[in-house]
Structures are given as C-alpha cells and as structure tokens.
Image (cartoon, rainbow, N blue to C red; front, top):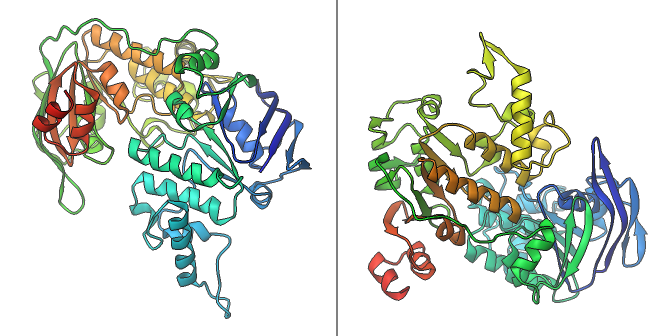
Length: 508
C-alpha cells in the first residue's frame, strides 16, 4: 500500500504540533518515525487514523486523495493502528475484542462465538501471533494483549499498520516476535509505520526512517547504514551522550534493609518469595528481570503500596510495616512508578498540580491550610524548563501530554524532594534519547548526593549502564546482588532462569 502525506499541518492552542509535514510510505516498506517527546509523531498518526483533522494538507492512498472523518473511514481505507495505550475491553475474550464492531452472527441474528473463535485462531496462527481466542484479555500479560491489538487491525484487513511505541511494555524476546510478525506483514506488499524511541529497534526492523523535530521533518535516513549516534544527534539536534558518565560509588551506611520479604497474590501464592537485600547511601542497585517475575510487588511493598507483606522492610533502621503510603513518602522515599497513568499522575489535573501531588499541603506550597498558587506555578515553570517538558502551558492537563512528557512530569516531581531512598521503576519507558540522557544523569546525581537508589528496569542496557550492583529477579526470587562490572550475557542467562554459577561461567 502506498501512502503519501502532503503539507500536513495541525495547530493546538499555543503550539503547532505538525508543520507542513511531507511523508511517503512505499508498498512493502517498514517506515520508521523518530523524534523527541512532543515532536508531533502521535499527532501525525492520529490525523492519519482519523482521530484528528488536519488544518492544512492532504492524505493520498494509492495516489488518490482521501478524507477521514473518523477511524472508521481510515479502517475502511485499509489503515490499522496499534496505540501506545491499548484499546481493549478487559472483561471480553480475545475473540470478542478482535471482532468487536464486526461480529459474526448466525442465521437467527445471534452472535456466532464459535465461528469468531475459529476465525481468530486461524488468523493468529497464520500471522505468527498465537494467542488463545477464548482467553479473557484482562488475564493476559501485556505482550499477549498487544498481539490482540495487532490482530484486531489484521482482522479488518489492514494494508498499512501504524505501530505507536509497540515495544514499550515488551520483553526483548516478545519484541523479536513482534518484529518477525511485522516482516511477514509487509512481505506481500503491505506497509507499516513504526514509532519507537529505541534506536536499535529502528536499525533492526526499519527500511527507512524519517525524523521529526518540533513538528517538522528534518531528515530521512537509512537506519541500516546510520549509527545510533548519528540517529540520536539528528533527532535531538545536538550531540547526545549515549553512555552514562559516573564516578565509582562510595557507599555509606544502609538506608533500605529488606529481610525475608514475602508478598502473596490473590490465590495466596508468593510472587515475592523470601527476598532479602540491603541498599546503602550513595549507591545504585539495579534490579533486572523479565517483567512479571516479582519486580512490581517488590517495588509496591517498599513504597507503601502493598502493606500486606510478610517479613520486614526498614528505612534508616525504622520498620515500615504498618505505615501508610503518605507516611512512607514523608519518611524520605521517592517513587517513580512503572505505570505513570495509574499510579504516577492524575490525568485531569494540570501539570502544575501534578508536580506537587505529594507536597501540596506543606510549605512552601501551602500556608495556613491554603494552597499558594503563585509558588506552585513558579515551581512548575522551573521544573518544566529543567526537565524539558514539551507543553504549551503549565496549566495543560497531564492527560493531554505525550507519554514521554508525562514521564518527565513524574520524574521531575520525585527528583525535586530531599529524599533518602529513590525507587524508580522503568524510569525511561517511552522517553526519547535526549531525555534518557538527562534522567540517567539525574539518577547518578541523586546517588552522589547521598541517596540510596533502586532502579528496576527491563532494559538490560539501562541496568548495566547505571548499576553499582545488579540483582536479578526470577519467579519471585532474588539472585545476587552482584558487583559490577558483570557481563550482559550472564545477567541475561539469569533472567531466563539459569543458576548464578552457570550464568557467570557461561557469560564470562
């Protein structure tokens, strides 16, 4: 399928999101779209999918001008979109989600669930995206939920597939499976647009990449012959340091002490199984692991979101058992949660309000029980500038920001406080390389200021770049911690279930 965008311009109050954008996608091509947070990538794709209308410009499909007044028009033209945040009904089955709106019926007008299930199973197998059509979507891990999103588009006979940050919640193995499926999809002349901040993914999958900067196309490159450094510099418009510069750690006294921690799920099975660890002032402990191996409940227990744990968690020698979430934060704990939408932000609140969510009732943001809006707004302006949050106003709702800019708001809020322990989960998920550089530098600064830092990340490169010590979680158990440097292969083997002795020997 050949797609052409000509002179696409889209304005919002105070900002030009897309500025005379020209883009061509050829049949059989995976076309990459690269840009900083707020560069206009998602806006451009929302226009292509009929969610927004362009103020200027035109869209051509197979050389013919088209007008999309809604997603239904785009779908009818053969365009499918897999959104960064899934558009699924959790209580529906896989087959029900995929066929929603185009349901199969029997001769009596009743839903033919059997026929739908068989059709979805056949489509999943032929597409290389196997999934149980009768499984309830809410019970599936995120990797399989994303397969459902892709199959929804394929079921509607998409000839051009838009993938918006598709690997943000995937393991490396799941990402490889996705790439294989995309290659199969374009092999017969269909096309795909791939949006990701991960430069190595563009180099692994994409045939041609266009770079957006502040709403304009600033260049097109062949990612197979361009280095990651060249792509990063083109995207940000300045030299970007892709390495983490840090001096050796100088650990001090223990700040966080976890002893024989057990967290159980609703079926009383241990999802954190007898975990003990110590994190000292002035060091970064990075926890690696494939998502779903206990990292999330471990972080929730440490930060006061999972009070029903067994064992003990101490902060500066003080037991945190029985403390409320607010008491944990006020005791000197900062927390960047892995799910910024559910636990990090109030989408309907402004950026300024979100930046003081955990400090709104104390000085200098409150006086005699009343909010000091002047101080809150000035504070917000400094944080927005310091963390390069791309927004027309500090009064813009956090929910209207791009995913990467939402993450910057959460990080800015948690990094501003005087804290003893900083716990960050997936700190750079959905964030561009320029902001990754900034966040990594801030994490090292927090360490050097004397905080104990715990980083939980599924990005192995990030773990090894930041860690003074590395621990690995597998099926609820903690392996290590191990002093760095440690080989990437060894950590990867332990993430897959190898014993430490075996992994260290093979990965040496």
